[in-house]
Figure: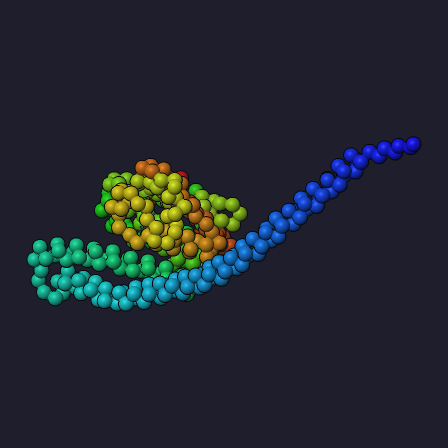
Length: 317
Ligand code: ADP
């Protein structure tokens, strides 16, 4: 008798392994199928979402356009009667229409001051809407920066005086010929200096400091000893209509577009602006301006104004 023994254990194991492998594969395939289906439905969702977003975007653009048009029209419509009101108020104040009692004069002076504020706000809104619609191309010319600074200081002299502030202008370079849109750069200085005054305390200080910048640029700094801007607000203040929400900031009136105009004007010139400040500790707005090619004109003396009088004029640094 011959007995044959075959060890079938190994084969059985292999069979089982194969079967299990097959099952695992089938399970993976099912999982894959589910994943593919999920992916497909996510893709469809995304496509739908995308279409919705695009629609929303179009709607937003059209609302934005409507807002711009409304802003432009309303500001324009407001300007005309306001100019008339201002003209008549000035006439009455100058007694061209008849005599005026001291009381009436006082009342009308307050009215005129507020009319001027309205005019300023509306001018700002108009500037802003012109720039937003790209209706405000640059009119480039070369001019000495100190001339513009002097003109602006003259414009805001009364504001400086009424808050008993002192203003210092310092030039630390001879190369002061810039190539820029004179009217717009003037607006930059008006807006920044008006803020430096507005957010200052009685008897505080404001200054303009100009130094040579990197190749082909000037560095300008407009500083104040006012209430300052908390760090978390410093990026936002350049946004349209943004105003810092603190009781100290709210006390000053405004529209919240001054700085966005400043930023836009500088960007049109290829320049940028930033702010350094601490709450309660004054602010420094720093920006660059493009230098011109004309030979530098002699630098003016550094000047300090206090309550409308010039002090230390003629001192060269
Ligand atoms: P507006 O002055 O009309 O409110 P701006 O765009 O010029 O608008 O300024 C935006 C906000 O930034 C101001 O409302 C104020 O909160 C803050 N800000 C601007 N300049 C200064 C400054 N020099 N000191 C403190 N806060 C400032």
